[in-house]
Length: 143
Image (cartoon, rainbow, N blue to C red; front, top):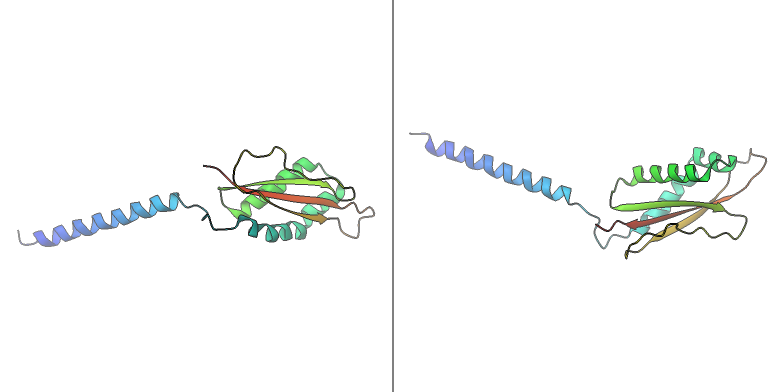
């Protein structure tokens, strides 16, 4: 067999490509946020997006069901983050009283919980302006 060396080199190259491909798939499946990454640094930009979203502002001003609006905001933020390791919870409270927006239920985690709040009101066109306080809580999942 004259071409025995060529055939062995093709098999060797194929096996090397398969090993590299399998290791890339394995490493990409275990992708996590680095421990040094500050989850809290993401919150200000998310709060700005909530404040600029006209749909959320009008829903808050119209007095729609707060639980449904909280869920919609959470889903919107999760779509923007696209990171399954981070949990998000949103609470909406009245801004006119000294009501405290707290995380309920409190997660069973030893990780840090980051939070930020923003007062949002409807547009000037609304005759009654009742500002609402939107508070976002973020933490890493414990795997």
